[in-house]
Image (cartoon, rainbow, N blue to C red):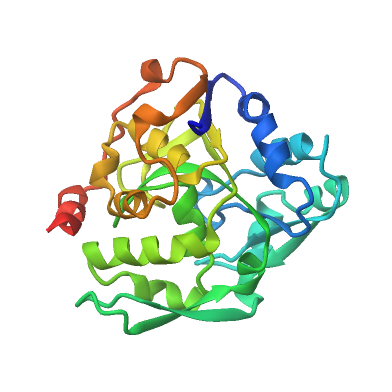
Length: 293
């Protein structure tokens, strides 16, 4: 059966997210039933850059939807790259979600970790990084993050939000060992922290020199799906890029970890073809394509 991915465009962020989730509600209900360790992973990596981060109102819309049929405690887990995670939770309004929705905030920078080998610049698996045990031990992971261009891998979406966000903060710089190596590393880590539900909030997206210093795009689009690869693949196309240009998406498609063929994705909601916009790529875009060499 073709994976379902919903695409909604509208003038209100929370309304867009709610509509997108309702279109795939049957998929979500089926997958989350009887799960005991549900983790929501937003993106609050650089708390000084509002545009780069997942807004609390996006997570609020997600929680309001989930609480209609899932009542156990939910964990919101994140570990900042720059700044303190607690400051990020407070600054972006995440603390107000704790009592309202019976959620727990977890700082992944204070988590315990399991080691995994990744690729060095010579493409040998000789480098070790730690992955968050909170993420690894969850049985239903939700990736909710902005739609952004990236300085190393062209786009950063739901899969990368987990693959990098689950890495111990001091180890994150170790993945930057060249265009091919970083894509191979993301494709190696991703299956261990695979999103069960992806919500890509492109109400205010980022183009150009993302993932932090790019320019705002009033995209007003949300994309959601329970097939992480299909969701990221379709969003890449909506951004005006070819999925085949993105190394880690190509490697994951080759591993059959989801649907990377846009012709096999069942798109629900608005006419997504009319929403395609050519995002300005990062100024290092041409060098990022060197993973293909």
